[in-house]
Image 1 (tube, rainbow, N blue to C red):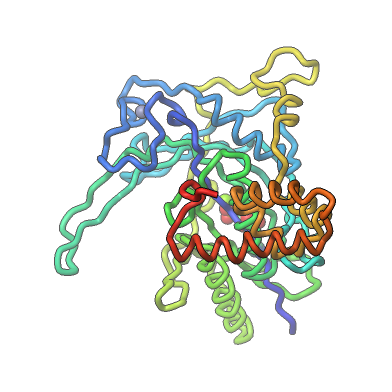
Image 2 (cartoon, rainbow, N blue to C red):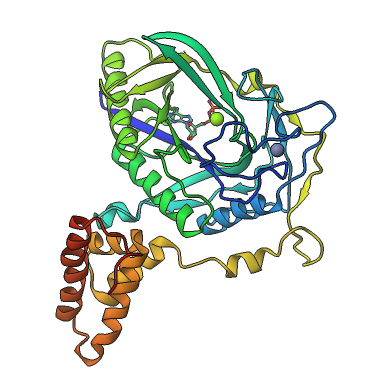
Length: 387
Ligand code: ADP
Ligand code: MG
Ligand code: ZN
């Protein structure tokens, strides 16, 4: 029997707005003093009311437009109820059945394999919610002594993107996550640093018999804080499930964590279903009239937002490969390092009549290998470079 792995991703990203999602507190993920950027609204004092941060809504719509999602004319917020001390209100304001973006796709454009690059990963939805506080467990000589809570992060706008279950390996999951990170940075909506928790990936994995339509029981893996972890945890989990299924046993639907040191996934908890969250429409916020097809009313002019989108990273990559005859590997470096690309384009401009692929490749190699090599040896940033 041939088992085929099926993978879908849920990716959260903290948006870079000035203020939080539903109050005017600063959105500063770098704030070191705990509980500084807080107020009665994000602490859920009784009697307070949330106000929608329009910029956050706009940023998620920009992501949707870049992915080719359908933006509905109306959207709304819902309450997702659960009880945990990182969530002051006892519910998270999120979106349930009317997300800001529906559908769309992201190509695996960072791949160096032209066939793989054509693969478009379908997006289910992109919605907006609020982040929760940080819980810090203190220990002394290995024993727990106290638990601290920092609400600076509570209420920071959080985008959630959900893909269809259409990927088949740890490599594809990693390429998708890397491609999305670069898109979020290009759109300047999130710093999307995984190590900092600004972008968080959850991988859903199941196996089924190839050719069969029905999907297998899925396992969700959380707390993956690097691209390496996304790929390795996925591949480990695929093999773990394959062994279970080949023994004729059943996979248990659960949430598992990733132990990077041991290189294994481990049981965290049994998966809760949507009904456990008792979603209900948020009564303290008005529904959003995002735009109007008749060009009247609504919060945004969708066409203006679309026109204002920058060159998207996969478009930029195609252009660089075409215009300068660069390899995929070379173009990847240029699209991920803006300053290097600026230098490269300036140098090529100077070449004038000598603009042959031989000179272009010489210029690329000088900048990407020699110059960058010197900069790395001297621990010098582009800002410090005097050239
Ligand atoms: P849940 O309600 O359990 O959160 P969803 O239907 O919302 O499940 O899907 C969450 C994520 O899991 C999506 O990215 C989706 O593509 C993926 N997914 C759903 N079913 C499967 C499956 N059988 N195998 C792998 N991934 C799946
Ligand atoms: Mg889900
Ligand atoms: Zn606040």
